[in-house]
Image (cartoon, rainbow, N blue to C red; front, side, top):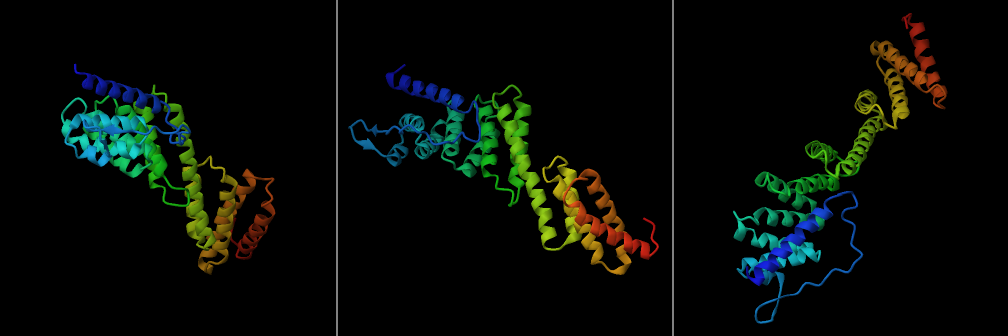
Length: 299
């Protein structure tokens, strides 16, 4: 082997070890900024001229581009390493380096916090390299991309659900992975976000006085997430919404809706008999009972 090839091979092995170590325990803090000063990378031509990343990418020399990409990767210059890995992919198509180049290109984007682009690259990697030694790391990163892209509970939670599915599928596929416990914790965190979103949606209906929709939304939230920490709030708002719906209804619907209100009231006081809200709900229940008694409707 030539000295140049041995150097490139050494760089590749070091990078593989680096990737395996860094991805071994992926958590929400994986992308914390390094306190250590990043190494300045200098690449020179045979004539001794320092080359820019653009010049390296356009050099037409696959080994130079590849080895430079690894140097920038090790120096945590993620944008530049991604550019160079992309620049050399075509040269090594079909070779034993193809999957490692694709992986490090995606991981560079991940470390650069470009999660949308990293997602595209990782999904492409998973399709093309289903037997790669980097597959587990790639799928872990793909799940983490969804996690980082997931918005707060006030916004649409489609990506949050996708992240939960991705973490769950990873844990099923790699039950012995060191990441399993960390991903379980992230699943719990994201599930809490979904609980919060379901509550916010229902409460929004209540605030805009769409009480029928509020009752349905609160009941769905409780059915989907019975362990929610908003449990008392939800039962309370179901009862209040039911009362206001009945109180504001046309006469032909009032009796049935007051009966429904009483059901929600009894459910609340049975579950939270010491709640400060009981007195308020008792007043609503009295009105419901008075209406039903006045109209000779059996309770």
